[in-house]
Length: 346
Ligand code: SAH
View 1: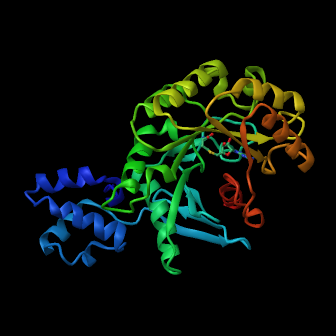
View 2 (view 1 turned 90 degrees about the vertical axis):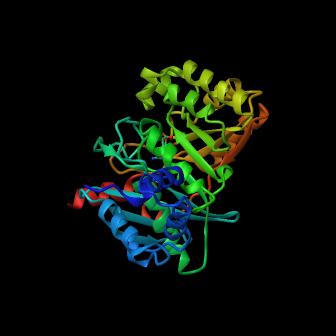
View 3 (view 1 turned 180 degrees about the vertical axis):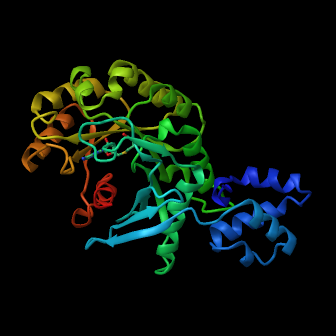
């Protein structure tokens, strides 16, 4: 199978052109056609010599994703279900905020981590996505937004899959959408979320860039975290936090902790106090997420008032805490819900 044009970074296009004795500016031109003019074929790249267009056509394919469904929520959230070349399906979500439009991308087909509250992991891991397949999700979102002259402002790597188990493709993806010859999405507007693959948190901290990091914490102690997130057996909470403090110290950046509140499991006052003690004094933000209902999972949601109480307790430890605004409830917009439904109906 031919690689996707979106699989290549600008540096790789430079290399590719050089190998074919093409001038370096051809790399810029290709980036421009792909990401700024956003054409769907090499034929349309009219300022490239015809022979070069033909060579490109021979070596690459352009469209990694086919739209299976597109659902638009009353609140403007858009959820895509995309088909891949090998019949798998992935989800991508477009969200509208007051600070702009963000896209949530998927990095793997399924996931092998087995978090007990998550729909993405239900069928296990099928395969990693290539960087081009991740880039294509942003491109499909942008092409959709082009119809209304809108623009993708930020990207969160918070869809299905564990980006730090597909590290190289995820990093290449970030470099591609960040490149100033292409989509030019600012590093500060990109956030990668991990369940806590510790060695790659260190790697990420050493990348020397401004890309944001979020950690899916979901529990304030190892015993509980182990129950909710099997990955905590491999990388215990203490080791995870050590990596987090390393990240904060090395990068000087604020770290986000995601904490999904699950009724009766991790949402009690005592959990809030324990979390407060754990994170006190650190440069971090806690994002409280009312757990999304997953039919296959047997969870209740935390009552509104308890969520506020949880936040009040964290406030008393002077920890920045936000409560995630929910979007797209009417279209199954949360993690893996749409794909799970699609797979069931197949
Ligand atoms: N594997 C990475 C990337 C996925 S991000 C990670 O774990 O960070 C998706 C976020 O949604 C994670 O914080 C995940 O724990 C959370 N999540 C998964 N299922 C959820 C549910 N049912 N309700 C709320 N959040 C959920």
